[in-house]
Length: 115
Length: 115
Image (tube, rainbow over the protein chains, first blue to last red):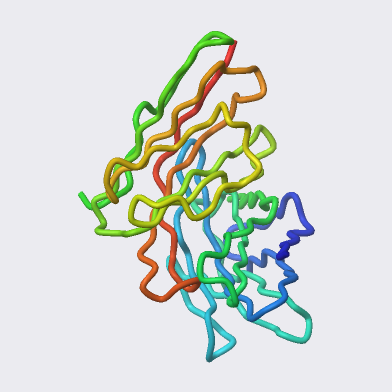
């Protein structure tokens, strides 16, 4: 069975500073990793995913994430945070062995960017 | 607009009632999902359909019954509603041509409140 851990319930950062949201995972087969963002009273929006290849994945709105197999991590990063990045961020994993495998979500990390 | 849409957006009802939530996607996807997001924002998959066939059925009370009249629609019917059913229900869809690497796209959610 797969699992995802987002160790921080909330991340506070000042506008213009780098933003990092942490994610670690556990999966039996090859991991397929995803980041989603949820704005208040909205659905989840896809940011980026890692399937294979380059460990650094670039996504929407200036976000990127780095896959680290040895540390089983997939941290989300943005070089310069904006107030509008304040939202709830979810990391998710899928087991590559299972064609119909479930997308397992982490508990979410609330990002608060202050002006 | 191409999207995943859900109706209604808000649903307030009494315990014991039966209610339905509808989902439609015009993305041409083959696979649709229902997720439940609880009050702590934790997301958990409930069901998944591929081309009208049930492929994922999590440990969900059988008061919940999904129905897929065609591959663009996945409805969720809930019988004998209980207080614990209060949550936000998200529909999602994906095109599984690439199997577990596919990206799921989410609807805006339906906030169900059971009184």
